[in-house]
Length: 366
Image 1 (tube, one colour):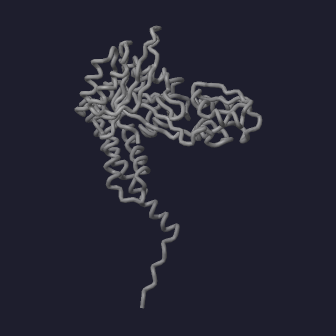
Image 2: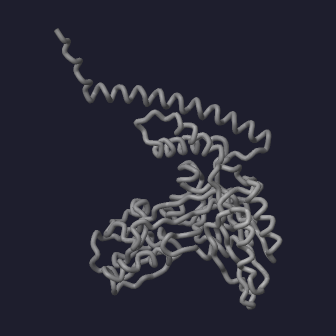
C-alpha cells in the first residue's frame, strides 16, 4: 500500500524558513565585512588601491561560474556588486562625481558600476565632473560619451583632450525617457524640459503629441524633472528613478523614438588612483590623435591597424579650434596594449601623429 505524500509546507512554514535563512545570510555578510575591514587595513599599510574594478569583475565571474540556480547570473552579479560595494565602504568610501541632481542616468550608471554604497558627488555638468575628478575632490567620475541615436557626446570628447584622467571602465544603459509632471495627463503642457540629447531622442514623439509645447534644454534630465515640480504646465523627460525622486507622475512611458536607445558612460580617474586594468579578454583602447594636414594622412592612420590585424570600432573627428581647419580624431580599437599586435600597431600609429594620447584601456561593457 502506497504511503500518502507528505503535506506541502504552508505559507507560514515557508516564511519561517526564509526568516531563518535571512539570519544566516546576515551573519555571513557581517563576517565578510569584518574580513573586508582587515583587507582595508592591509591596503592602507601597503598603499594599494582600495577599489579595483578588475577584482570586482573577477569575484563576480567566479561566483557566476559556480551558480547552480535558480537565481539568474545577472541577478547574482547585481547582488554581489552591492555586497562588495557595502564592504568597500567600510574600507574606504569611494567618492564618485556624477551629473546631478539625483535621478540622472549618469547617477544610475555610477550605481551600476560602483554599487549603491558609493559616495556620489552631484555636479552641474560634465565640465565639473572632469574637474572634480582631476582635482581629487572625487576619486572617480562618470561621464556620458556616446548615444546610440544621437552619436558622440561632443563636450565629453573635448574635455578628454586635455584632462589628466583616463578611462578605466564603461557602463552601457538602456535609456528610457518618460514624460514626468505634476499632473497625470498630457493636457496643458506648455514647456518640456530636458537635456538637449534627450529632447533630440524624443523629437518625433514630441512633434506628434505635444507639437505646440516649447522644448527647453537644461543641464540634465533630472534638473528638468526638478523644474517640472515648480510649474504644473511644465514637464520633464527623465527616468522612472527621477519620477520617484521628485514625486512626479509618469504621464507617458518610454517616449524615446528608438525603442533600443542606449547610452554609453565612461568611468574616469587619475592614473595614480587606479592604473590601466589588466587584460580581460574583451577590451577596448581609446585614443585621440591628430595628423599633419597633408594628402593621405588620415588614410595612413589606418594602415598600422590593418597591418597588425587590429579592429577599429569607432572613428570620430572634432575640430582642433586652431582656425587652420585641423582636426582631432577619436579612435576606439579592440584589444589591450599588452597584446603584441596591439602594441605594435599603436607604436607605428604614434610615429605618424602630430598629437597622440591614449584615453584609456578598459573592459568592454556587456
